[in-house]
Length: 402
Image (cartoon, rainbow, N blue to C red; front, top):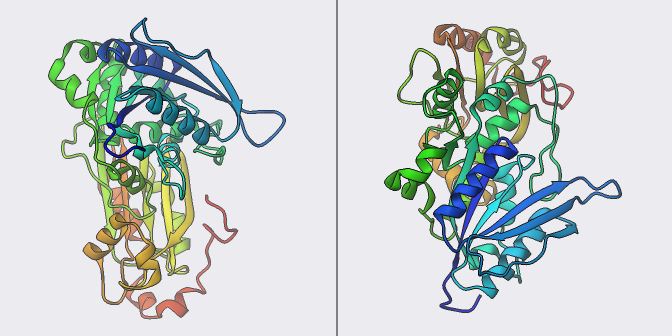
């Protein structure tokens, strides 16, 4: 990028249905006069690994010239990065609204889109990142968040990821948002809208929330939701932090009768067999849970816990950090090192269990008691790492998530 040249602004718009995404993009086109709308669809190619990426460019001002619809086969993130850089080079101070389809896993996709590349332009040289806006149709969201009887595959940047349930896909999309835009009928007048609004606040407490109607009329809320850009690198750090295998789960500070969030923590390793037995009691009424485990028989492994609807996934995802100044420590992200410092134990390092459970009518005592029963006893703890390795593991013995 030419030194001193103003950057453009890149807004991200997504939605859990094509209709609500289209309504969100239409409203953004009225909110941002002069913006360019880059709408994307991704279709699996029958002839190879890479998909067909179709792009449609529209302008909010009729005087602006835009290219005809484009189609290409290749890495979606690479194709879109080239499109966006070309737009900024052609038009200074351009504001682009990138409208992503619901088949995209938003956070991994954005990380790949913004990834720094050696010897080549990266998106960060040309754009500041505006908030990620996710439109939500309440009825569809409530149906999807409990749907686990079928699977879908999401594009994560350069490939389709492993199959996930509609419940998992819905939760990930909501958790990616900086602002949640509730679709029609969501002004608090319908039961589904009220239930969806309550659950959304628990799944993503950091996101602002506004209705689609409010987006058009509430100027202060709209400005906060849409126009706050982030300094270079900060957006990528935020997205990467949410995808870390070791996180510090957050409980919504305002529980209510309909939905609540409970965070369970322990600094003692878990017995894999007793954990298996505890899963039934620990998952009653849970709509979403996310966190990490310290399994006694795998003392070096970070084991992630993630559920949506009635589907639970437990898998080995990383290694616990070694002491500061070790190669693993230096390679870790700043967020991971900060959390490790907060929780560091001279003997066990950063090892710990933390899981956040969100659902309707959760029995905190029952969930906590079930998980506490799976912790090693004092006698088992005294056996040390070598003694723990011999424990039977019905969860990860085949190397796959549950």
